[in-house]
Image 1: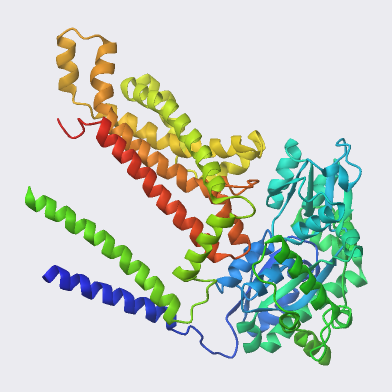
Image 2 (image 1 turned 90 degrees about the horizontal axis):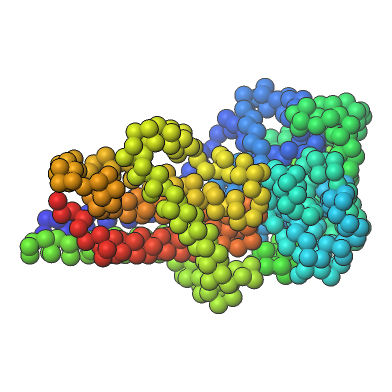
Length: 343
Length: 261
């Protein structure tokens, strides 16, 4: 009898403590956060310049805020970190931004790093005899699932009518290079700097620039945790300011910008410059134009691009529901760019 | 005798009560509190997803295909590990010189996490099943080998000396005394190996797989499909228990002398 009573008390304690843990609010309000956690991709963009040149420190170090940078291989890992509330900002392909919204993550899109061009492409072996997309029928193609490369590849295969005639292999960028070196794969759709390794003994069959001209635009975007942006709007605008400073550095002196990012990425300056020129970098004014993010009053065309992409991902079974156009309009928030421009 | 039976019945009840409490807690937390289904999907959602996967498969591949692909990889690896680790382990336990050669190699790679050398296996063996099976093989090999070495070392020396004095050859001693005495420990090693290999399955199916229960969990995690991840994890847990129970049943049936000195 005693044993049963003890067991009952243990169960009650376990249940109540778990419910209490789930219900407790972890938010503590203070003027400034002690640290900002930032997820970034290994790509030569405005964020990489800003990080390498310590441009973020100009805005945050003086305020006693520590900036922690975490490198992610793709937006998949960034979304997982957002889901656990571990990061405040993260760069990712817009497809992962769609996944974040469709799964109800409390995040918003606040900046477009770059519109993807030749920085992402479908590479084939030089000796493969593959000269057009249709030649890929019966071949194995590697890509990183849920990425912009994956989305672009699916669009290319669909356009060619061979989507069901190829074997798609899900791989991280480093594994794609390893499999390519061994000759295990016939083609791969990936991004720089991995793409550069493939093109050393391969050819570019289709780039994301061509995919965009087919009407399927992709971009690397910046997502931010709403809990952070709503509590610290000025700091969010500061973050945008650091990115703009990085972008300006590239526009003013592309060679210098390439030299800045080349070493940390482990690539040559020429390669870095080629990669940077392989995508479209937007000015803050272009960001909030109707062609891209639009303004707080009026949504831009990029919201429609996101919706079309989401519908395609739903069709593919990658996501279980496609957010509405209104949800995308609300998800893309140019407020912090506007705040920067008003300064 | 009666007390023992009552105790085991109480333990069985305790197990069921524990799992009932876990499910009840899960149900309450997800239904009474504002918990995002992304963080913790409800039992109803997970059940609904399970039914959908059973009916329609995942990623155009049936659940049974996912399971069979994983188990083919798993069983090939464990069989290969058993066939190689048992003789090597017994020989290492029996002959010091043999042990000096093999043991250090096993002890060297055993603590290394499989993911640490998986990239190398892909480089050496390619992205097909060979690298996946090899990874699982390496995970399964060490527990069987170590169990065999330990088993030989724990054989009652009196039995060996008695048989020798009665004129038994080295071969007879090995086959009729050492091997039967080691079988219970070998089976325990096999059960441990199966568990080790199964825990490595997700890692093995991370790269370039297009099917498998581990791959299903990985793919679902890419798209934040927590309900699918739960389904995959629960299936892996249940099938793991079933496999272990199967091995335990075989052990009790065929190693009937276990525990009898």
